[in-house]
Each structure stands twice: as structure tokens, then as C-alpha cells.
Image 1 (cartoon, helix red, strand yellow):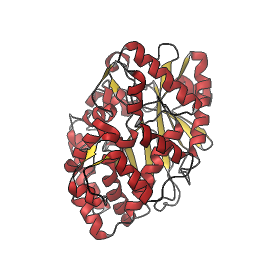
Image 2 (cartoon, rainbow, N blue to C red):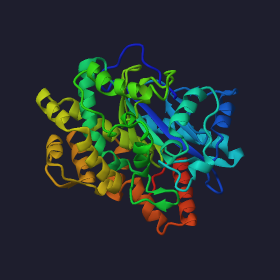
Image 3 (tube, helix red, strand yellow):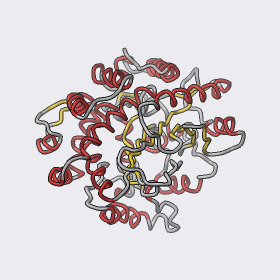
Image 4 (cartoon, helix red, strand yellow):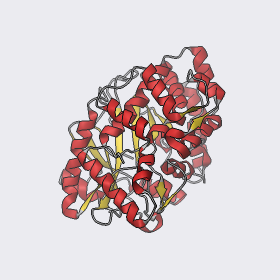
Length: 412
């Protein structure tokens, strides 16, 4: 439950950005997961800790011992120069891992990990929180212990900005796997989905369904409305399972985007990690550009956004999870809110919206162009892997490790 530092003064819309990228640690030869995140943090800090600050970025632990998170050390003023900073720290961590015959591996899940046999929860510092989650939900499943995502935090300074930002993010969430899916394999097989991570994630709190809801958050008209419709319901449903209130915090909300009132941001959580920071920042810049464009919607248009219920938007999200860039979006009202008519492929929607709202700067624009031309990372992983076998999955994983170390995209 690592935290991003909250600014002293609230930031207005798009005045700052928080980025978090999660990577798994694997053996360099077998590519099996290595539960040694605490050794990396110990080596970097000189003492056992759950977070190390390193200038612009920080490194921190996650729920499981084979995952480490790199994040902006407080809000960044721009997304345009972050890829190099993340790339530098990826290489620094790989240098720490090399004597352990280990390295970082990107993509959103480990393709053949057995979470029931290989999961080791973080045992230090935040163990009380993690142990509570484990007691209630059993964190050995794929939806807890085998998933790596990119989180994007966007700030709001007051209630009006919150309402506008929340409505715009809801509108875009169903489209995100259309450029970000990177998990076509799970449990050693092709799942039939390009975003298997998100499928596992949306089911991991089934014991208390209100925690995840329909992944797409409910529409709200105020901060008070958000507390009443979302947070209070979660807290009430958690109470019988967590009488001490250990999880009674806003981060217990597991929707695809959650309000972080402690730092006045909305955190987008459904983005699969890509093969290198350049690709990650290309995806995050595209999301930001489009969300920014829709925050300018007037009250009438925003009412139309919010008239789209969460379960209805989930239908489009499920299509994007299955088919990625080739998902055919055909909800007429949804497309009308986007200013489009259809049916239309997710990749075409992204191309049109990014162009409408100003595009990206290079080199991220070039990276996004490769995604839109060659497909999501999931699609490209399928092409590289070919017939699925232990050997082909291990070979693809090796190529992903090389992409991450070199800062290159995976192009078959």
C-alpha cells in the first residue's frame, strides 16, 4: 500500500501527474518468479524498508515478494520526460538483481506462474494490511499475486474539478485495453482474452462484490455523492469481515479508477504494464490527452456521460479485454458521447480521439503509432510466441526482459 506524496497545495486539473509501474522479478535462466523484492530495497537503502526515494522516482514493495514498483516521487509536472527516468531506474534495479541471477520482467502477468504454489506475501512493515486482505480474500489467486499494472494519478483541486474529471475518466475506461492489453497468457495457456490480468482483477473480490463493483465506477455529482454511493457501501460490506477497520480506507476501493481524497487525485488502475517505460508513457499520455479533452464537456454533455451506467460501460470494456485493438464498439449512445458513430474498432477510436485532442510529443507519439499499427503488446506477444508451449512462453518472456532492459518495443 505504497503512497504517493500529496502536494502541499492542491493541484488543478493536469498540473501534475503520478505514475506507478509494477514489474515482476524473475530468474534470468528459467524466467520463474523470484520473491526477492526485499533484497533489492535493502541493497538500495542500506536497511530493510518498504520504500526507497531516488530523486525523481521512488522504489517500493507491493503485496507479493516478486513484484517491485517504480513511481514518481511526488507529482511530476509533465509526462513528457518521465520515460527516460523510469528506464534509468529499471537498469539500476537490474544491476542490483544481476548478482542474484535475476532481472525485471514486464507485461501484466507472469504467463505460467502457479500462484497457489509460488506466492509469497510481503512480510515486513505493511504486513497487517496484507494479512487482512489475505484472510478475507486469499491473495494466492492470479487476481492478487500475479498482476502488474501501470497506475496514473490525475489531480483535482475542488469539487467541480473532481466531478468533471471523474465523468471523463469513466467515459474512457472501457477503451483502455484497446491500447494497453498485455496479458494474453495465464497459467501456461492462451486464455482467449488479450487482457487476462483485468479479467482476474475484476473477480478477485467476489466475496464482497461492492469492492470492485462493475470495474467502471458509478456516476457521481459531488464528492459527498461519491462517499455515499461508493465508499460507504464498501465500508459497510467490509465491516463484518474487518471489525477492526484495518481496511476502512479509500484505497480498499478496487474499481478501475478510484478517488484518492488523501492526495486529491483520481487513480486510473486498469492499465496493463507494457514492455518498456517508453511504451508505458505513450499509453499514459494518450489516456491523459483524451481525458483532458473530455473534462471540458459542458453540463449537458457530462449528463449524457453519466447517464451511461457502469454495467453498460462494462459491456464495452469486456469487448476490449477480449479483443484489444480489434474490439468492435457498437453501443450507439456510448459512441455518440465520444462524438463518433459506429460500429468502430477500438484502435480507430483511439486514433481519432488522440488526433482530435492534440496528439502526443515524440518519442511517445512514435511509440503509440507502433501500438496502433502493430497492435497491443498482447497481440504482438501472441505473434512472437506462436504455438503456446513452455519453451515458447519462456522465449517470449526472455524477449520481454530484453525489451525492458534496452528500452525497446516488441515488434515481431
